[in-house]
Amino acid sequence: MIRMELKIFTTFRTIVRTGSFTKAARLLSYTPSTITFHIAQLEKLTGVPLFEKSGRRMILTKAGEALIPYVDEVLAAANKIKNFQYGIAAYQGTLTVGAPESLLCFRLPPLLKRLHAHAPRVDLRLRSLTSRDVVAALSDGQLDVGFAYAIHERDKENLAFWTFEESPVHFYTSAGTAAWCPDFREQEMEINEMPLITMPRPGEIRQMADDYLRERGISFTNMIELRSTQTIINLVENDMGIALLPDHAVRERRALGRLTAAQSDPMTVTSYYGVHRNKWRSPAMNLFLEILGEESGHPGGEELFCDEGDADAADCR
Image (cartoon, rainbow, N blue to C red):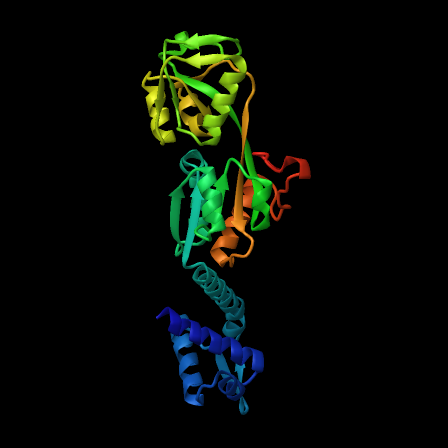
């Protein structure tokens, strides 16, 4: 029904534009009887005559002239819908994204939601990986977009990276154990009251914790290791120990008073997102990169490179 009415409106507008039923029929590839039928249907729909005879010509009535802007609005809206449908259709296929769990769980969902709103037909494949595995998967072409906490100069030959964000990092404990939490600004101490809960090596957050504690001569009598940021947070919240965590991973629990940041010297972790230079970029991939560029504050920004003397740096910029 809607499609038929659009045809009728198009016929009416074409007659107005050409000034002739015959020219409109020729332009639209309709028979004269189809043109006449369309106008009869439109007059039935509006309840008023839209054309009248003047000699051998058909001219618009006052009602017909008044109808023109409304028909234009309908056709313009229909054209916008058609363009929207074409845009949605362009965003198809599969987009594979890999990231460390702390980013995948706590930073990417709002951005993936924005992607889905614009490209609902895209199938997402999300992979929880260490930064090292993200770089390897990008290099092998297994990922379209990858996120990592560490990149190196040697990766720039085949991969392009951009800064995603910098996040503060703190040692966190539960509200119930905060009273026993040590001051991590102190030097040379052994912590017996509670274990350190951490990811196994290798891993950027684990490496940050190891370096921080070693430099200050701090040690834990006990340790809990597991490969799940979400589970680490749950264990900390349930009074099981202390964990070094990015603030973005515990923002909600901290706001609710369930987790408390211990005193420590300032620490930050930088995250990056990247692609393979030679990988074909689908419309969906380009759309996601555009969203990431807007989120990180540098849409279309320059790629990251290391200085020659920093070939082994973990946070090349």
